[in-house]
Image (cartoon, rainbow, N blue to C red; front, top):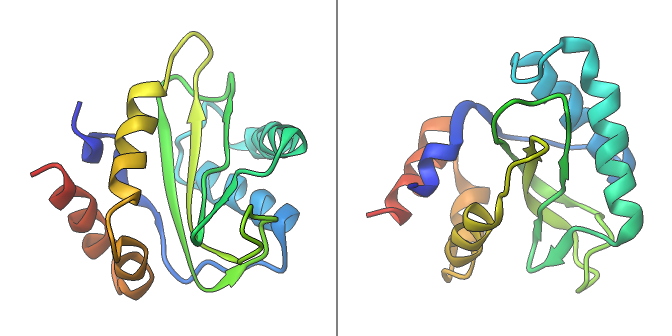
Length: 152
């Protein structure tokens, strides 16, 4: 599976801003629901709660301006990956105490594994300057093409 195969342009959100971690997650779940990627539109609250429950186990703000909120959920039948880019950064209680600018929100259906995807995503995020490229992106196409370029 190519990394880019997991991404959809309509799930790339530029200029994402929220006042903090909890509101970020609630807004992320709502935006994902509005794209029709959940079984039912009214499952945004359920998804937000599942993401918040996961955050209580430990922050998914990994540092280096990256956060990867993720959860398993019945609201999805297939892997859903949304990209949220914050130009100013959002306090996500990251390991390095720096605000996160790039968020990969991952929803995995029960019975599925996302380990291969996460390993590939991790390799991409280790590339120098990749986060800066995401933050400077001005369109969904540009973000999508940046991810696709990693697969070449």
